[in-house]
Amino acid sequence: GVTVHREKVYICDTGIGGLEVLDLSRGSFEYFVPGGKGQLQLPINCCLDQRGNLYVADANRKQIVVFDSEGSYLQAFGEPEGFKPTDVAVYGDRIMVANVQDHAVYVYGLDDYQLIEKIPGIASGEEGFIRQSTNIALSHDLLYVSDMGDFNVKKYSAQGSYLGVVGGYGNQAGRFTRPKGVAVDREGNLFVVDAAFENVQIFNGNGDLLMHFGGSYGGPGAMWLPAAVEISYENLSYFQAYVDESFELKYLIFVTNQYGPAKVNVYGRVEEKPAI
Image (cartoon, rainbow, N blue to C red; front, side, top):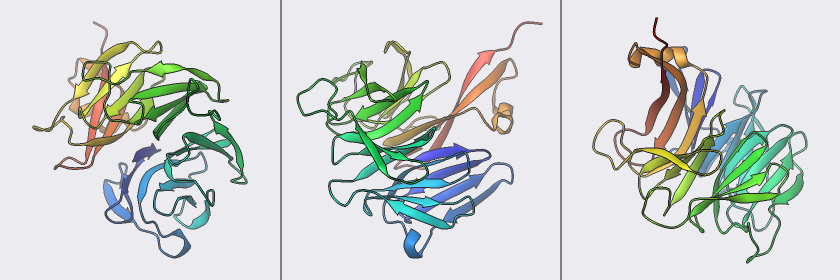
């Protein structure tokens, strides 16, 4: 997992049982490996809220582990049975958790960590049922869930109403075999990682394929078993120097790789500058 908060990039590292934290403003790199009640076992995704609190989905602890902005342990929460979190996101006053073990996204209160509801809350065989939720993204009051068991991305309202599906099983453009990380830009375009194709496909708000990028690793810009994708409109000044001077950087796209020499790839959405 990877997330960006202000000038820091947080990367989950299952090998060390913690996170790497890149501070772009200071040009620094440090490990975050908490102990005691906050000790992590298999941190696979994370996010931060506006207060700077860090939420880590730990698949082995089967909990969401929460730390404050200074890295001190605050709380851990989850259900005693049938709970294996694979992703976490804060949206408004709610914490959304992908629970791969119960075919749903669990919704908790931000202040009390109490379970409010399950999305979609339907039985197997019904339209919109999630077979294997791995990653989630929220934007424009919409919830996107990558369903690796059904080879697609399912779309719901943030309140839980099923709205449709993007993609499906196949090896042609616009299809998936191992969908994982998802992200949405401000225009409503959906970015979907496929760990098997080792690329990211981009769809518009109607679910139409726009383009893809990446590909099996053969050098810079390619991917090696990619897992997560994150879009950030912050920190553009640190990367504008790498963009051709006739283009302007609009936002950054971070993609993590589980193998190979490039564990985090950074791409940029660019637009041509107007002619003078």
